[in-house]
Length: 297
Image (cartoon, rainbow, N blue to C red):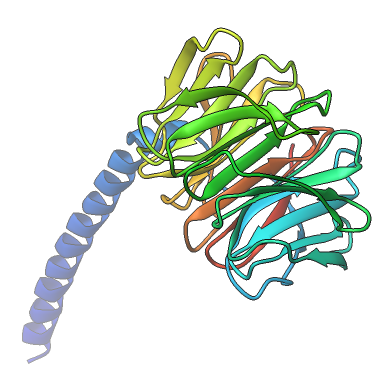
């Protein structure tokens, strides 16, 4: 009996070791295939440390913008408000309620005096950054305005939206200067610091980079698997950050279009991306109702 039990144990152990060997081989193959996948060429999170999470909005966040001095952030939401809050503490400073519906875009003037916001109501509104008093309403678009950005000198604003146009206009008079037509809806426009290049994120999943003065296309970035909702240049003009429905924020070289990093910290589509003006921090917000601020290393 003892000899029989020993033989049974030997057979069972042999079978177990054979199955374990097969399991280990399968695991090694999976790891090998994963390491060889295209996505392994771009590092994923973490690429820094979360500093502040702001929970002031009642609905999803559509756009965020740093103040040029880096002290405040303005955020626009489906709740119909633009909220200005302290970038280091997350404390609310004031709330602007000038739009008749969801607010889709927000941007600061470089002299800190004004904020421009674009809404689902088809308007762009320019208002005092300290008091919230409205000073100008631009009505050049035929549909919702999804993106607004100031020029460095504070004299001009570029806005774009669902009507498929990118429009440049005078920030003091509201007079339209130039109109560009794109191949699809434009969700976000980013103006480079030198004032000559614009990056336009589109619903077809691409980011077009083109010259504002000549309307010539530099290149097209195709790193996202879905509509691009947010685009922002770093202050040194070297990098562009873009976020989209694929729940990622991608950082890529503004001169070549080569991808540098991928972030996947959100549980839903990313709607807005913004760099701090010293290029040391980057913030983004999305459908999950949160905004994340990351330290760039």
